Length: 304
Image (cartoon, rainbow, N blue to C red; front, side, top):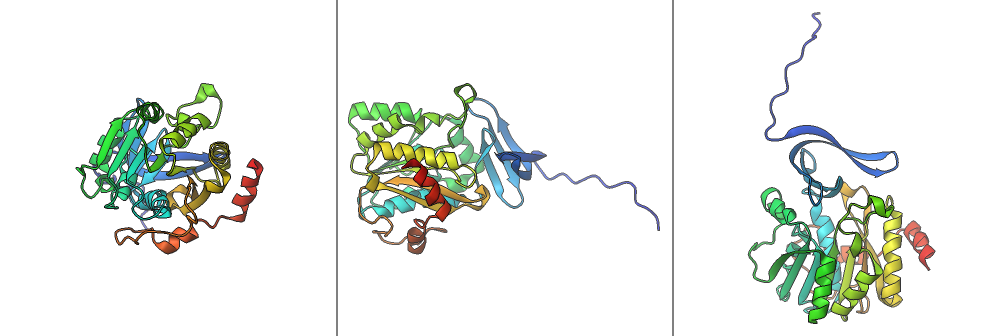
């Protein structure tokens, strides 16, 4: 039998260079993606957009995955609908999203007709532009919804400005990149200031009677992020108003944690009408999201 020595060249697969992209998750542990690199730029942040046959399009900021187009709805629906449904129906009218320039959280908030105003404040002006070009499915049903305002600014600075102006909100969503863990000389995440006691003290003043929710990474591989934010919440908010819930986001590798300050009773029980335009969220998921693994609970005791 004749031995084949030479192989045919691979056919062109379209725009972009095909790469093996590795995301460091923990020590000696990476997530790897064989994908087409369709956008890359360094500046305020390092931004890469990959196209993968399984995950669809993936957005990386500073080499960390922010979401994939295949499962982003899980992350965003859990981030938004659980806090909104934890409040009395119709209570949430004014919403501030710190970060969230990908529009995913705003898309979900605007599904509630009684919401009157949504303000996104994102520090990087490139993110909203890239979403419109590469991830249009993250935009609200009406991209020109008059209730939505996008501001390019550091959320820490803008919250201070809102505080001086006396503006208040019913819901604040901190939808940012994960904070840096390390020494001051190696900080690169622009969200670092949003994970601090002073920032949350300001949030409490602009959202005194409302809900404040923040994503806390994946505790299985980022235990210190959840514990660090939990310590901040315990210092700023009443213990009886602090709740932690979770959602399994497949592209993140394990359950993502969310921490919420909620002054309303029994947030584990949804209080509004169930939506028919979600893919992940329903009332059963709402209640189940507050059931935490035993090892999460044991870790949280370290903060007491």
